[in-house]
Amino acid sequence: MSGLQPTRASRPAGAQAIGRAAEVLRAVAALQRAGAPLAAITRTTGLSRSTAFRILRALVEERLLDFDPAQRRYVIGPLAFELGLAAPEGRPDSLWTQRIEAISRTSGLTAYLVARSGADVVCLATAQGSSVIRAVPLVVGQRLPLGVGAGSLAILATLPDDEVNALLSANAGKIAQIARGRATPALLRARIAQARADGHAFSRDSVAPGVAGVGVVVTRPHEAATYSVSVAAAAELDRAEQLRLAALMREVCACSADG
Image (tube, rainbow, N blue to C red; front, side):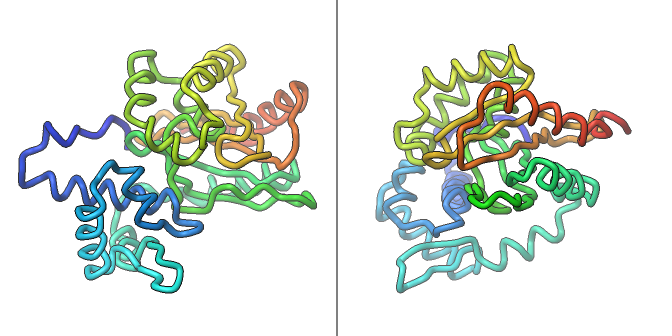
């Protein structure tokens, strides 16, 4: 699930259509919670309106996407789910779900498990917190560009600088689309440096205004995917609270370093 995607220019002509369709699917998945309008898809992918529309229409016909004519928005379709059932990897086992639920129950906050997928992360599991005001910026299956969100930032901070720079450059359009100026390259690099020093990542306002989060990487050595767990709060998280939450997540996921 790791690695940068090939550029369009480097792909053979016949593969470019497949690559563009995959870009469109990823763009829709990133906006799955509210649905993706055509304008957002063209901004995120850089495709022309006519090209994006042709691809969207074909994906809808194949049931990889659904289209809501009233809202004029696209969402991931049933065939994508059906195909995913056949994948031998990618679904979290029950232990991960139990850990996420334990973190949420103990902290009172919404907790997430995400995994790296190319230049993005994908949300694999969530557990709702007991706080009166809950932060729910992610749903299962939703994607975020690496660097946006605490769990995503925790993964990005583990990578070498040249890969970080390449990912931030590749994701610039998507980050701007989602964060809307709340996650500039300078701010993300400062947060990466802080995450490396602290051993956990802290993010605020990048996924949604007023939402803060703490994330830690918890991958087991024999697993191909790079996982992180995180919590999000619709409130400020001071330094002491960040450290407490990071320690809690490490404790609950301590077995993630075992076989």
